[in-house]
Length: 102
Image (tube, rainbow, N blue to C red; front, top):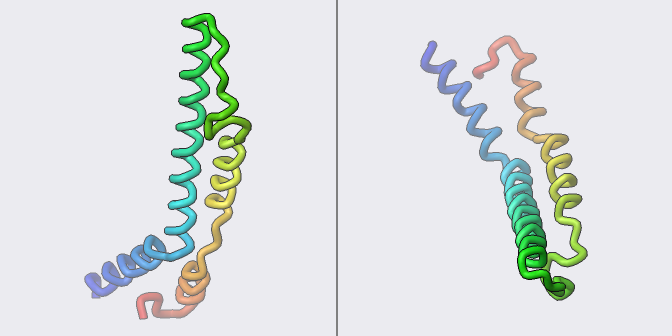
């Protein structure tokens, strides 16, 4: 019986971790974080070059010019923090029954 309960808990965890909503949101979060890190790194590097060489370096044609990557990252973080998983509703229903594992 203990093995069955442990397997039931593992199955529940597996359902949560494999949910499509979670996968998609985590993927968007990774992309947003990577984009923001790239944009911030590029801006910092540009700043150092301008200061070191005492020249005006035109960054207006860079892919990160005028793009607020931090706002996009904050939005996706908020989406992740407020994520509602359908499987969690099913788990809550199952927990209300007398035999949670079944």
